[in-house]
Structure formats: C-alpha cells, structure tokens
Length: 111
Length: 116
Image (cartoon, rainbow over all chains, first blue to last red; front, side, top):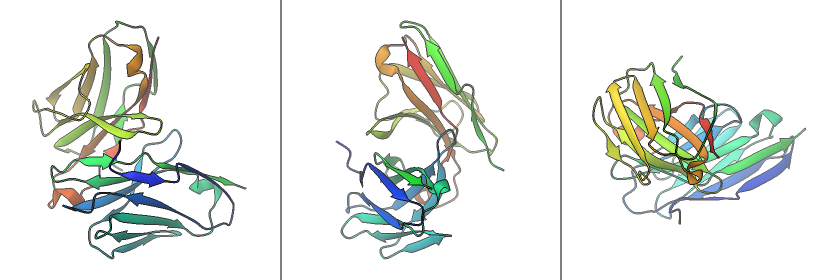
C-alpha cells in the first residue's frame, strides 16, 4: 500500500479543457512535496518542489497548491494541450531525505 | 544542460542471466539512485548511493546489487535475473545543496527490461 496516493490513475480530456488531480501524503513530519512530469520515451522532469503550507507555484499553464496540515496537493492544468499528455508523479520527501512516489496520474489530451 | 544517461533503452534477457544496467551523470552529483517502476505502484527505490563506494538498501533491494566505483557512474546488477524483475528501471542523481529535501532528482530515460 502506497502512503502517497494519486488520483485519478488516468484521465482523458479534450484539448482546451482545464483539469486537476490530487496527491495525498502523510501530514506528519512534512519536509517537501515534489511534482514531476514524465512524457513517454523521455526522462521524468521536475515541475515543482513545494515546501510550505499554502504554497502555490505556477509554470505557464500548470500550477500546484499545497496543504500540509491535511496532507494533499493539487496540480492544475489550464487549457490542456496535446503536449501536456504525460504521467504526472508526486513524491513526498521523508525524514531520511528519500522520495516516496505516488502511482502517478496518466493524462491524455485529445486534439 | 544536465544529463543522466542509461546504457540501454530496451533490454531482453533470459532467466538466470547476470544483467548490468549502467547509469552515468555529468553533474558531479554525490547522490545517485536506482528505482523500478511497475504499473500502479509508482517508483520504488531499489538502492541509493551517498557517494563513491557508498551504498544503502532502498525499499526493495532483494535480488539486486549495485556498484559505484566512480562518482559519475552507478551500476545496478541483477545477479540471476528472474521473470519478476521484468520492469522499467530508472536511474537518478541529486546534488547536496541545503536543505537536501528541496533538491530535485534528475532522471535518466529508463531501461525497459524484459526477462524471459
């Protein structure tokens, strides 16, 4: 059983739709929460590192929020494009400075 | 441009073979990691290395060993491959800027290993 959970597991949207997905993690002993994007046939790339309760970060059309007290983070994509199709991974940084990954959300954007 | 490379994108081996997966990073990072990724299970840590010749077991080390003789290279070894080791293997590296928990990991493109 993963203690970092992502939902949904997969998501199909139309080009132009906005979408969001969730990462939940243990709320005790929080250090950092990482988001990665993993496109097919490429390396996972870091999107955000979130460290403070209430953090909100943005990169272009993608943004993320963090609630460390209740143990969740949301990733939002505004106006999805086909190039946003990827698996989005979140990872909780634990006390040992290792990352525990969720199962990922696979996003497919249809043109 | 930072880079982590892995020796093969696809690999097919037979049960019982000894398998070497190689990873090289050009960022002078101290920490390196090996993960495997299976559907629905996320990335699971097999082994990591703090620095040259130093290694620690991760969450699922059984059936694997590692070698780090040079800072830039971290090898994953399957001593006797089994079918349940069919998976996607990802290597990553990380620098030591403080605080460590804020540092992103840089990943290679992965090796998809099939054991027949």
